Image 1 (cartoon, rainbow, N blue to C red):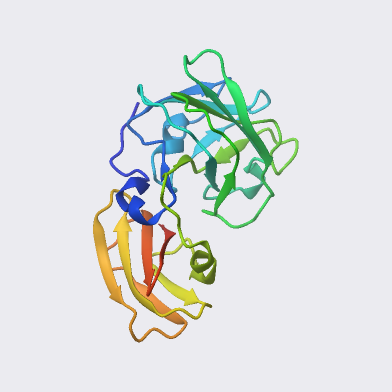
Image 2 (cartoon, rainbow, N blue to C red):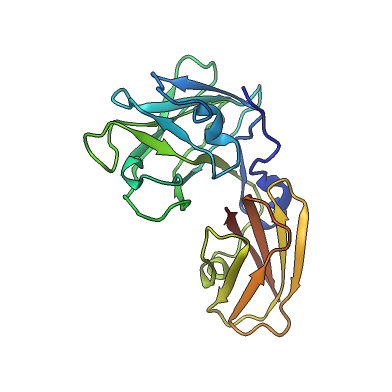
Length: 254
């Protein structure tokens, strides 16, 4: 399996987030059902942390699924993030199922949900679910239900499961008051804010936790254009601080 250095390592900024990523590209990924994928668009691409790559299945009549071996660790997944691929919006899946196992053989269904069809590419959506059991294997399956019925093709850029971090609560109100647009972008975007707290600074981190840029917000007035310097494509995180709270927003750079 091709390994990549770039992966979504939310643990690097976990002190501000209420959850951390479970998958990383060093883990073993295997197909569930038959995956008819072209070269470089197989199951390895689904957890590589790069939204510009994707899993593409030309024959999803039996479902498009994959299983991730956590390498001996056991994690409690309580949410899933799914990112749309670069093109062909009709190939987006319309539903998913999350299953867990502790032997890699017998799997328990944890969550199912509907994914509304959307034209926006590189669009990340998170679905929360209830689960209190730690599993060492997780399986994700997109069933025969794509946005262009009858085509029989499904594609997804990225999938990530998250576990909660006990004792840490993110400021959800602040998070909802902050917007980053466009998202995805080329490293140039606008930070918008609709709240009344005084924002103090933004720190931009890479997916591996490296600090990329620090922006002073002492004179911030509801919106600010931000240009990330010498940036490459991938997933980044904006850590936004206010006087008494903080939150983190994801940035997708193409």
